[in-house]
Amino acid sequence: QVTLRESGPALVMPTQTLTLTCSFSGFSLSTSGMCVTWIRQSPGKALEWLARIDWDDDKFYRTSLKTRLTISKDTSKNQVVLTMTNVDPVDAATYYCARLLTGAEGPLIDFWGQGTLVSVSS
Amino acid sequence: QSALTQPASVSGSPGQSITISCTGTSSDVGKYNVVSWYQQHPGKAPKLIVYEVTKRPSGVSNRFSGSKSGDTASLTISGLQAEDEADYICCSYGGSNNPLVFGAGTKVTVL
Image: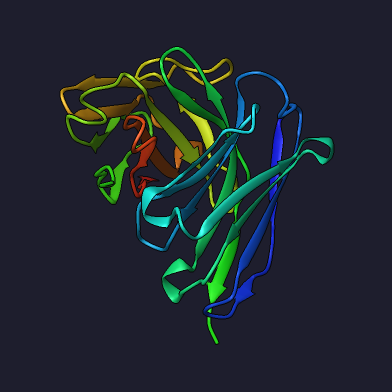
């Protein structure tokens, strides 16, 4: 049974660094084809893909946020960490982590976490 | 990196069929047969119900079906049931520079 759970601060001050942790079970991020990705959704807006880390430690970032995001993994702990520097009120959103599979057709998100709501305010 | 366009809401009576559209561009929905749909109940994690445009994961009701024409993908729910009341989100592969593109979600109401 695959499960993912996001954790992190509910409130972050502007200009600070946001650190989110995705703890997962039911699969190993050392298995070929396995990836974990982060997505966010601001109220009333489309979901926005942020970053992805692969079983072989390849990393991919949303172009517009590339300078502010860092994704890393701890395979032994079954955790993936996303950091976002210099947060702004526009970064307030529900942040989701999800399992992503790479296949012949293309990437597929098959399992999601419930999301964690992050507010940005002083 | 434009988002996919979905209607904000769709409603139907029990037993009816409804269709949710998801419009992208020739760079994502129109180019790749990598469109997926997710069902999300309030406070719950999104659940995969359709992938690669028309495929259903094991255990997903055959009342859910997907299709695509040009730059628009669609999700049809037939025999609408009360439990289908949820948000439905579409997602498409957009190539190496825009890996995943999402819609804002469509709220389905069962009247």
